[in-house]
Length: 315
Length: 315
Image (cartoon, helix red, strand yellow):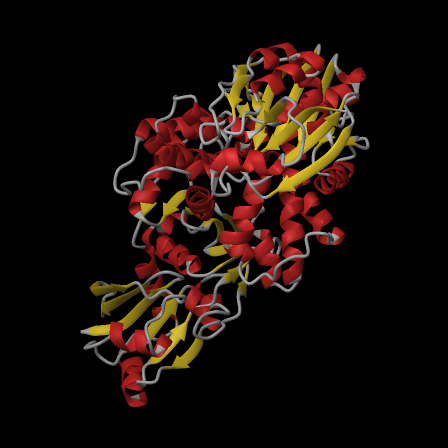
């Protein structure tokens, strides 16, 4: 019997999961309705359409849907933040078709002022999958904005953002490095080029990879890098820079790999790059959002017969 | 009496200088006819139009006009490169209207494979203005692609590129950091925001500024950075990163400032940032192209009565 609908609602994508009473995902739906690409009718229409035919159960959403450009702005929860803090920050919204929706707050690192939205729920989900890490853990969530997260005693204590994915995209699409380069097949990786890029970042020392970025162009002009190898070389440089900076800043200890949380293929790139830094093999969790939404929903008493009765009464 | 026409012909701009017999610039003209924005009729039409009414004297060009996408591809001169090496690499082109044009080669760092086109001529010009630096000097040429150049005994021995200007542009125009930010007034600088960005880069240590780039967004969201202060903050971070990386790599000695060569306003930003690193005040040369074209033209015997006679005979 379905008990909860979870929404992972970001900038470019909306994913909805229907949970069974034991937290298993019964059905998943995905639409390209990120908060900047909503269908006619906006948030209400998107929710109503993606949940079509699903029962009237509580809905819990995480991600940019709670940002200033989202459905309802939900203030950040400050670090240190755990499930209870996130739960307390949930903001309720009533949809046009009478669904009860809760939006999970993002987390703000009160020291550095760095922020995240959506990733906090993935972190909670990852810790639910790896309870042994709750005492002390470092998590790396690769993506458009890669997040470095530190956990102590089950609480998120530090957040730091590397714009790796976005840097890759703007350099690939709008800079000289991407000029004349054919569309890449995103499903395959040129490992040789990727590894070469990682090594360039690794060996850039304290100067960092920005001093070597132009090598993607110079090597191509010199005939030492094929045009269609440039994207993976660039990807290697930028992902390698994350590991280099993580080690140089002391965030990463030389003999630890953080838990990777996110898209499987992207995590595999990070894991591969980590080995070139002689870091231990990194563990990866790719379905953390679902686990996190379930975990927070349960804590917020959005899960169970009385919550369902209330959701149906609201209708 | 005019003796030489010099062309500084880059990607976005064409500048023409008419030199007197003593190397003084008699007249300067500028058009937005970079090699990617040529008028109808292409290179020939651009040259003919910008030189309209000028006498039939030799023409010497430097910059992207000698690249693969230029008028004629001119191979790179390898380091170490001095005036004689550049002169030997000049490639002659005859224009449709009968002008004799020489194109100066770019320089390739034979160790790192890094390259430059146009900046080699500025370096030669800067050394002509500061002969005391010919023995040993470091030059920094800020721009879309900032070039770090090392000179020994009058020869360019090392070239390294930082894509600072291009990074700024793509982040400003295409990333989340520039989202919603009003067009900036390019003639004024928010010094407070710029300095704050420089300090962030300086204090990022060996991790480097990419670990702090997102602060432009986080501080703005937190109300600690005004929307219209973001561009100068970003500029400060990226220019600061050049100094940080220059020091961290050992290229810069803690008590030396390189000679800045380029646009006056941009050099002033670099000089200001340098003081926040406690570097000595940096000297700046802003008309190095003209000096370089004249110096190379003279070495190549493109200057003088017989060269003029030949140029007119060609016509």
